Figure 1 (cartoon, rainbow, N blue to C red):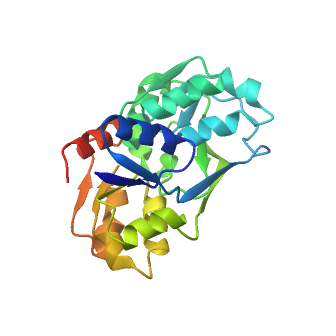
Figure 2: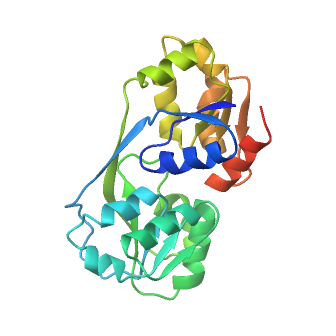
Length: 239
């Protein structure tokens, strides 16, 4: 198949390489641009551990003025990709929940329920959920401080090659990794939405899939688990 990957850089290159290894032709259209915030306010601390739901949070640590302090803390990551990014950023004590945000919160409670210190959540500026509020039940009173350490700006247009391929019907499938990138896809395709909605849309989560269904996409598929391996496995099943 000829596939379009909408994931931001640099993770899109890894996804493209895996798809090409399966024999697919891949075009890249990063619909979000990630920018770290080096002077992000983390709060005074100390913290029991760090929570991570995106590899972008780990990469932002590399440029933060309190990097040495941060990488000395235990880190709980939502999945394997974010855990790998944390290790690459210098964290030594890294545990992956291998699941979604709820799994991450349950892991945090199991590990730190008796800690008097709060957890530090390294988050993006625009996010679809608040860990400390939405999953208060799983946390059982364990406090979470959210620190915004990166921004994700939406692209205003598709790269020319990606737009042309979509308009001409030469894309059989599109991979979506987040709600915001799906929203960006729909906005960038507003003047040729019929063609852009025709491919099979492979989504990391139901949350990401819903706007595509509402926009009229007829063939939307959701990975069994919210991780890259599950999404790639979904693509292997074919159109």
